[in-house]
Amino acid sequence: MAKGIGKCMMVAMLLLLTACASVYKPQNKPLEQFDTANGYYYYNNERPNHGDHNIVLSFSGGGTRAAALSYGVLQELRDTMIVGQRGRSLRLLDEVDNISSVSGGSFTAAYYGLFGDDIFRDYERVFLRRGVQGTLLRQMLNPVYWWRSMFSAFDRTEMAVEYYDHSIFRDKTFADMSRNGLPFVEINATDLNGGGRFSFTQGMFDLICSDLRDFSVARAVTASSAVPVAFPSVVLENHGGECDIRDTGGWEKLFMKDSTDPRMKALRDRMSAYLDAEKKPYVHLVDGGIADNLGLRAIIERVDLVGGIDASMKEKIDQMPKDVLFILVNAEVKPSRSIDQRASKPSVTQTVDAFTDAQMKLYNVETLAYIRQRLREDEKHLNALGIPIRFYFAEVSFSSVKSRHEKDFFNSLPTSLELRDAEVDQLIRAGRELLRQNPDYQAFLRANRGQLLAR
Image 1 (cartoon, helix red, strand yellow):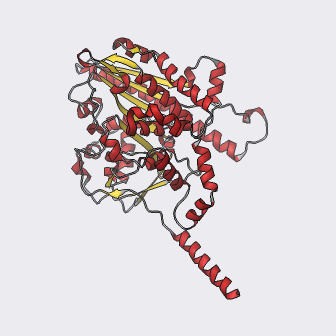
Image 2 (cartoon, one colour):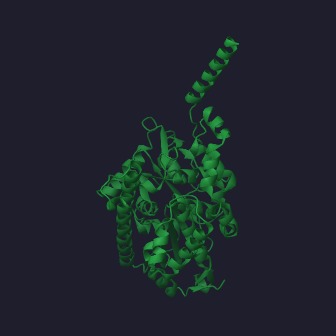
Image 3 (spheres, rainbow, N blue to C red):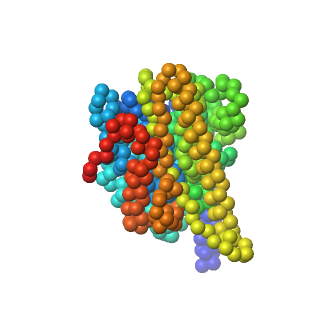
């Protein structure tokens, strides 16, 4: 009997050693050849009604709070009509050209990018009112999870990917996203080793010589929302150097350009690092909110990479639109903290929470100031070239809520993937009303004979 027990223990130890030695296998495939005509690039995703107007949406982080607020904005755009080319009446939603997202906002962006108007039929049931966080916690406590995690690389992140894949995004890939011809959706994560933005676009995957087409949308959303420590990183294998990036005709503009702008230099250095797989064989991705919790940087950087606003516009369309509307859905909250009310030193959790929140808020302020300045400069630049274009910037945020009671309510909502139905209802309604009341948005509607339909 003792020998039998000893053998069993030996087998168990060998299995445990095998589990410890198991190596995570990245799910991105190497790129066989560049396909600039069909890859998931910004300039390949044309909207059928695009013409007079270029509308760009940015969905911030903030868990289900951000997802619901963004969903309310989509509802408002669906129900608003404007006059487009040749006097045609169009839904404002049909003029949306690009959505950039991070973290919680990526759930809404990805769902709309995959399923279009079906989002208004089932997204609330599939995600917003589902209690995703509780479901993940129950799965983590399930013995099946522990068994799988013991003998494979199945960790909390892989558990989330599997759940999102099957229960929310229906096993869809970026090939499905590309076929839809809907707005170009840029899901953003953060490269853990350096803190730079990493976007799930073929342009970014070209840098690591990888093919985005078969990559799971759920895995991209998981990376975009993977809060460090709570969720291990999503890992990509870097095949950089196995293909010639100059064949794309896009990134070479960045590397050939000699710029004294410190932002451009930093961007160039971050992107260049991916070209050497020997020094950087893997890419570890976590929550996109760390690099930019507003999702705005991706839009600015893409414009810079192609040589400025006029080059960016010409890359996408044959003629300039008459106006550009940016809508930022900013689900940032300002929770009340009690650490300044007592002399006792805050706990580690309270300290980390306050520090992270403070850093993110400061960066958000800088990002907002920068994009407002850039829009003024770009409008002035294009006007000087004889292009009478107008830029509008509408921010949907709780800072615009006038009622003190309502503002306190929104600021008390947690950054989680589970909210009560009544909270989801108020967030959706807030998304609609805050956009409708925004002065820049109202000016855009007046200039284009916009009208909200009764529903």
